[in-house]
Each structure stands twice: as C-alpha cells, then as structure tokens.
Image 1 (cartoon, rainbow over the protein chains, first blue to last red):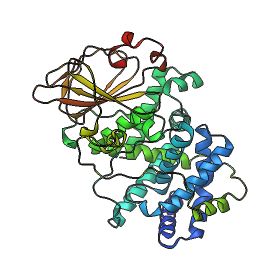
Image 2: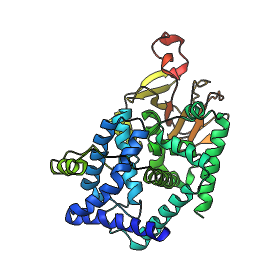
Image 3: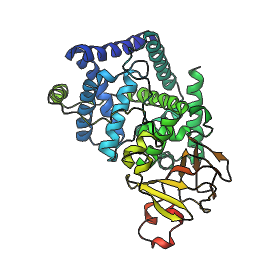
Image 4: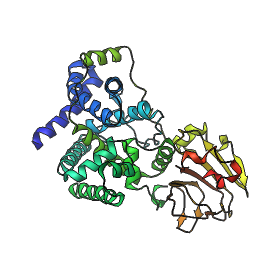
Length: 183
Length: 217
C-alpha cells in the first residue's frame, strides 16, 4: 500500500511536469480523475452547494494547468498544492474576500528543483497522510471539521456536544501525534 | 529579522489560516507575520500538507457529466479562477501583504490622530473583523484597554512593552478578552504595529462613537 501510494505521489508530480512541458492532456485527465472529485467534496463540505462546487472545481483544475510552471515539488506534494488552490477558491467564492498572501521567499522556483529535496518532501507528505489516517476517529474528525467545516472551535463544540476545552486538547493531542509520527 | 522573533503564531491560528477560515483582517496579520518569520512559514507548510492529506482522504463526489471536457474548454479560453500572485520581498518597512492594502509603503499611510500622539489607519477588509496600523511615539502609551474578542498585535518597527512581555519587530501578541493591557512604546524609536481584532459587529455604528471603547477595539 505504502509503495503504491508513494508511486502515485511521484506519478502526480510527473503528470504536472508533463502538463508544464508538453501541455499533455492525458496527464491532465489522470490528475483530474483523481483530484477533481475530492476538490468538489472539500468545497461542498466547506459550505458550497453542488453547482458552485462543480464550477469552482473546474476553475481549480484549470488553474492547475495554467500555473503548472509554478509548482515546486521541493515545497509541496501535488495534493498539498491543489489543496492550496482549492482553499483560495473557497475563500474567494464562499467567504467572498481575498486572501492576503505572505511575501515569497527570496529564492524562487526559477532554480531547477533539487531531486533529492523533492523526494524527501514527497515522502514526508506521504508519511503525514498515513499518520493522519492512523489517528483515532475522534481526533481525526475534529481536525477535519476545523479544516473543512468552516467552523470555529465553539461551533464545533455545539455540533459535537463536546466542551471547548476538550476540543482544543484533542486537536492539540492530534497535532502532537502527527508531529511524533513525523520524527 | 527572523532570529530575533520570540513571539510566534499559535497552531490554532496557523491551522485556521491554512484552512482558509480566518476573517480577512486576521489573515492579513498572519500573512504579515509569516513574511517576517521563516519559522512560522515552515509551520504553515506543515499545516498546508495536513490540508492536502485531508482533501485527498475525502470520499470522491460525483462530477457533472462532461466535467473534464468543460474544464479543458475553460483552459482553452483562459477562464480559470483568479489565483493570488506570489509576491517578491518588498524591501520596505511594511511587509508586502500590508503594502497591498495601504497602496504603498509607510509614506503612503493615511494616519488619523487618536489622541496623545498615537495615530491609526484602518485598512479596508471584510467586516467580520478589523485591522489597523498603529503609530505609537517613542515612550508613549496606548491607554489601558480591554478586548471584546481576540486581538493580534504584530510589531513592524520599534518595540513595546506591556503587562505580558516585551515585543520587538516581527513579534506577535495574541490577546483575548481576559487581558487588559497598557502597551508602552520603547524609548528611542517610534513603534509601528499592525493590530487586528474580531470585536463583534454590534459594537460598531449602533453606539455613538464617543461611547465606544478606545480605538473602537
């Protein structure tokens, strides 16, 4: 399973390179079939209705094509990068404001990404995904709600019936576990 | 810059910024701190990775018929969503994302006096929270004030001290309603801060301005 997922991760990076270098529609279709349905789920869980989620998903995937030259595999996995595009779309379309972005680091994507750095980053992203999947259900659910539900901790408290202190300590516990798993 | 910073963003703020769930005013303050702090930038990278893993772990939702073809059509006609452009180091006193809201560096700020030499400039953001630049002359104090909700104060230049600690350039103070504090700027240099607060909307407009707490915080 691990090897399969790692290979998938490398494949996604290769797909984005093929889009960047050769406007490869088959590579795009592969990425689309895997990620677009999940982007749509993310947007719907964040409060978009099906029509808006479909529209935004198409825009997110079109952005991926157009910004393929900005993807840096030493900084992000394909899933992380697509998440940030979808997240920005959600802020724009659902929350209706723009997202202030930090200044970029002085070293940029103009240098050819180092293969070894990219490999380490991709493996760590994979490890994080596994650590997340291995969390106890209660902790994972709370982290999911924090990311997708567009809910504050106090709103999560209302939905789950858990006291605020418990939620905060469970999220902290989950983050500690994730950190431990990454060591 | 980055090595002197002692006061950083919390996990909760970084997670909410990564998830896209913060009011615009808070997002701006977080983005400004990250522009100055490589440590928090790296931590944000980790939270974005968590977001990516959670999204990839979502069950697939059925797409509309012809969704791929429609997307390829969008690509052909250049119809994608607007993705914020990455921006290079500004090199000014104000971090890049703050300059975007001011329309320039420090000399472009339209200050309004609020008394005792303190000046402020409220930046335009969505109405669920407010963010302002504060100018505190060297040695001057911002009068004692409490908070309706959460207040983030990021030092851009100079330094201040309050009941909690000493805050220098790049440091961020995270205060909640429990804290009543009197920030005092260090002697020797004027202090410029970016301060965001999510005081509830009902405190704006309904109550005569004169009766509002200091600085409408």
